[in-house]
Image (tube, rainbow, N blue to C red; front, side, top):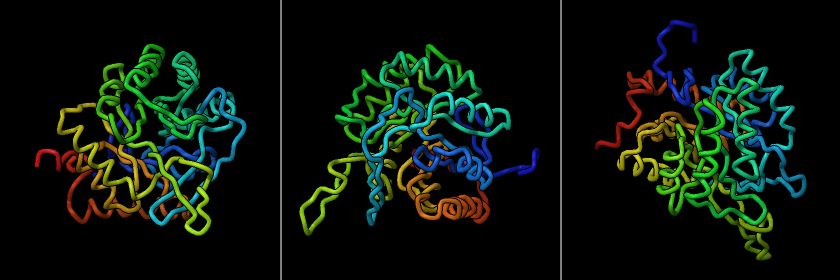
Length: 302
């Protein structure tokens, strides 16, 4: 989009002025600089990096299992070093690219230190990927844990950040804890627990319960965002879960998401799929004579 040209798709989140509310979420596909740059060139409003961790697990398989309604994955964090990531982030900052750094660490203090390093490398916005349920031993998230990580980062860096949480029991309390501790936004939803069984052998695929993403969780996440907005949540919301086409983006915006992340669908013809969703959304706006800002929250008061 040429500078100064009116853009009905424009959006703003985490202090970033974006050409589109259609973002690429964090995952295996955003672990490479080449992919990040190509997705931005294809029109992504922003790209969220794979989660950067100062001491990621070096053992264990990172596997994907495609399902008719989405995907199970046993992935955790990027295995690239923080130094490598900081070099990439400096390049993105130099080129003025809207890249959101996803971060996690083993303790709040370590996360605060990591946030300081990536902000020093030029990151203008962060997403705290603190709710990955694929960690060894699983994850039992609590409002207290969410608050501790959020507060540590808020006291460490001045840049805007979102806290990524999983939909499910107690999400309202976890969102409230993040906001009270200083989060500028929340991302809903991280993957939720899922399990697949081989009907012939009875074998549990992937060896256990892992993160499920895809269209099956979209109605659940829409309901969570809708309820949170109805209850008065004022911070920005990055909607995520099951986006496959332009209409999904419209639905998320309508219930109060400010921007929408797409990820799982990109595991099939990544660039073509993203372009189809982004172009489809732009066409939807033109066809209905409206804008991104007019869509945001339009369903909440009805």
